[in-house]
Image 1: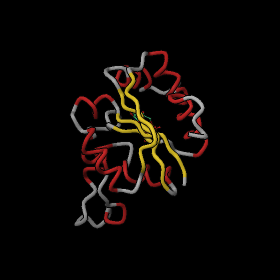
Image 2: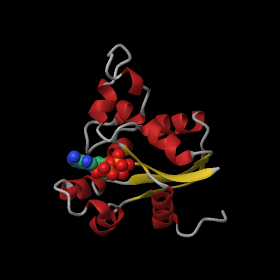
Image 3: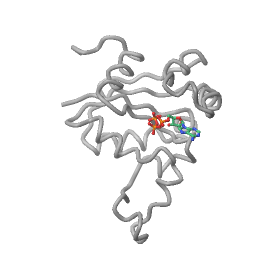
Image 4: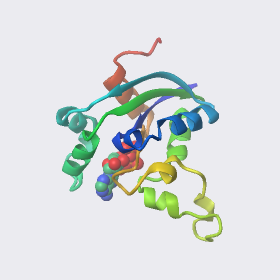
Length: 150
Ligand code: ATP
């Protein structure tokens, strides 16, 4: 079994998607090991997304991430990191929505995704998931401290 850090971003919480997202999480075989709601300030949001600090969208990203509380969760199941990334879908929620089973080009990549359900565009994409074992470890301790033995 493996752990990953999942986050429902401010637009996901304010849009009242939390319960539906949690249903999908549990239906998909994850356990929610821990969860907490946090209001990020600009300093913490910048630290969380430090790898994007040079990008043109960084200031806007920090504004978005501090616009309301987020819900962070430790999810656990076999291959949790990859499974959660597949389940949330592409970064750009518009892509997630426009992939259609009848569209030949996108057929191979079509599947239900959480971002197709509640995301808006490449910034407001309603959820986050760690993209590697290293980032999962960093992000879990960022929000929950040392929980390796919990
Ligand atoms: P996350 O890390 O939040 O799971 P991701 O790995 O799919 O998302 P990244 O490329 O790491 O995407 O970007 C981090 C976040 O920055 C995105 O989730 C999104 O909110 C924002 N972002 C990414 N690209 C853009 C962009 N081109 N314009 C505006 N915001 C963006």
